[in-house]
Length: 435
Ligand SMILES: [Zn+2]
Image (cartoon, rainbow, N blue to C red; front, side, top):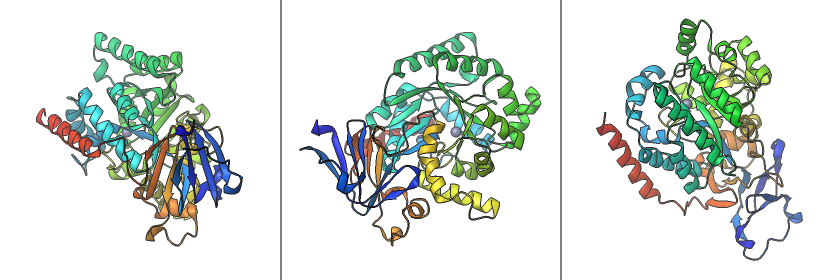
């Protein structure tokens, strides 16, 4: 029993609703938090329990990355400073044409290593070969939302289309009862999925009760092309096809008008906000304060490493807080406590996994300890402020996911980082040679 008992001794604890408890302790047994509260009331840990040093630190929920393409770590830096459509069509899609199970596995494992080191314990992925990303997530010990990704090019004839849906179904059925992997269905975007594909995807998601994850209103061009091709803007297009509903969360949501925000709110559709990617691709700024005011669920995401170029939720939090203040010319917009929720509890609700994202007894055992000892975190006037405006991902000292220590004192003992980096290098060289 003691072998899977972990507790953090020393430091403070971030409680639900953003309260900080000085002198707190967190205990977990297996994949369940059994205590989160004042040190003097903490249960005595059993003999052999694993103790993590929390001194000068803050124990908080693991961060949740609500939108990424993990294996795109391989494409980090291959084509920067381009518009989304040039970047995708001239650089990314040609590389992706030759993806293999091996490229996706090693790219995903590199992403998992990077995410562990930056305090992420759960990620929602949209890519190909989801079995390989699942293998990587399981080897790394992270939770993930995974599934096949639908595009017209993958379903370009009847045989391929049937095979794609068969794989999507089999993947979802294979992992639907697991605690670590949640099956979802990814529908890439309205510009890569025709109406019949979107309709069929929605029907499969309803039949198997899957979350639906897609890109939506990322660029002005996407909206204009949709209007020209289908005679309506993307939100109306998806509503017409019956795709809008609480099981859908969509990345970006930049080019939305007031009426479309109301439609999303009315259908329970949430938005994954990826500020770095939106800034780097100059796609625009999602009006997150307006979406929140209208009651749209929002969580933060990194997007893939080819458009970010890091999987670093601390940077997303910092930029999220600032980009909206700047746009509104109002420093009171997007306060730090709200931004932390977008990376934890609100992120969990967005992806349909509301048990995650809060430290409380009975919750899954996913948490991190952030070190507040560095000069840039001193003096400790305000934990919440420091997390958003001062911390960097390298301040994450320990990470626990599913009741297992993934990183202790920045050491990720169960993964061979030299091997992963070397394999990732081999895989991008392989893709480049086939261009
Ligand atoms: Zn994306």
